[in-house]
Figure 1 (cartoon, helix red, strand yellow):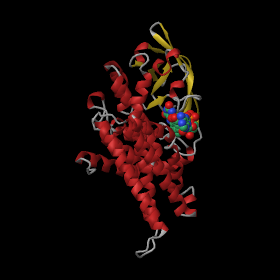
Figure 2 (tube, rainbow, N blue to C red; figure 1 turned 120 degrees about the horizontal axis):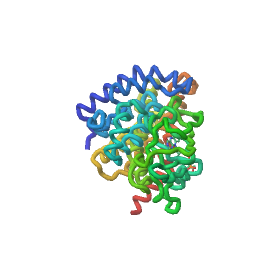
Figure 3 (spheres, rainbow, N blue to C red; figure 1 turned 180 degrees about the vertical axis):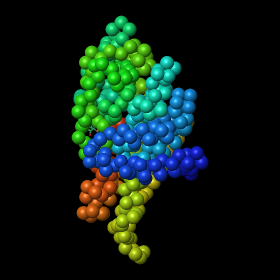
Figure 4 (tube, rainbow, N blue to C red; figure 1 turned 90 degrees about the vertical axis):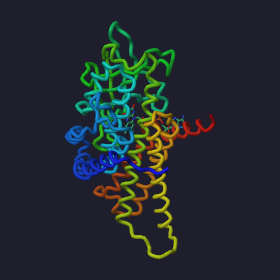
Length: 374
Ligand SMILES: Cc1cc2nc3c(=O)[nH]c(=O)nc-3n(C[C@H](O)[C@H](O)[C@H](O)COP(=O)(O)OP(=O)(O)OC[C@H]3O[C@@H](n4cnc5c(N)ncnc54)[C@H](O)[C@@H]3O)c2cc1C
């Protein structure tokens, strides 16, 4: 099997690469120093239909395939992993689940504005005592006549504050644990939704990560996504795609670090295998292997085939590779690599989180080995 993009995919890749080199790169210093969400940049991406790449034209998107979308995250993340995660969360775990599980009324009301980029999307599952064990969430949703009333809090929510729509998970039947969780579409301006202060993170500066608090937040019952009790299955199904997005982000970080090494490192001449030759060969092979895993998982997802194991493998391997390659870049570039003015330092900080979010790599190792035993 050879990995070859179609002409249309290559054209998109080229367009995004050019945009990233010019426009995203020039926003990075502001995002790094001010840790501010890049509103104008996202608007310019939206004008190019890139906030709705895998969404059908019928619902206001660009009508491209899932692989095109993964190419976009990969290219964007080579220049800014923060913009990569903004795009990934918006598309994979907010817009696509509403498209896939929503009614036509919900698609009309929410997907169109998400796909056009008029609204940014967010995904709110994690709570203080429920990260890896997501079924332990406690945010409650109680039916009150024609409405649901939500109470509780979430934390570490990407795009919080900037989002026009939150896909939010809450407990409708506490006795059933995972089977008692439901999904809700919550407009960002709903009364009772409070955005906490942004987390000051080690990396991904410019991508908002905040707590959310809900106090007697009321939404109409028709904003529930899917059936009551189907929320956990919706979250899990959406996270398969989300993980491929994060894998593509991690791959972009690793590729950017490899490029730095290629440009800056001198190898000893001759045929003698030195430690440095061996290390670079290893890093390059790992990066290429990550690329194959990412696009293999994306291709399964695009064909609508099961891809839980492949998405986990891609996410685990690409993120471990990103950490290994960026760590090597900082070390091999010496003091220069540690400078706050050098991209290696930022790539190193940005790489770390890819091992943690959308399921920690320990959890992915459990998922993958569990599949092996089946
Ligand atoms: C920058 C950032 C953005 C995020 N964005 C979002 C978002 O948009 N929406 C959202 O809902 N969440 C988001 N998260 C939350 C993220 O998904 C969680 O941080 C992640 O699932 C891990 O949960 P936790 O932090 O509670 O760690 P824990 O689950 O408490 O894990 C702590 C450690 O224990 C290990 N561990 C846990 N369980 C096991 C086990 N069974 N076996 C072995 N080891 C285990 C973990 O691997 C980890 O090393 C984000 C997090 C970050 C850092």
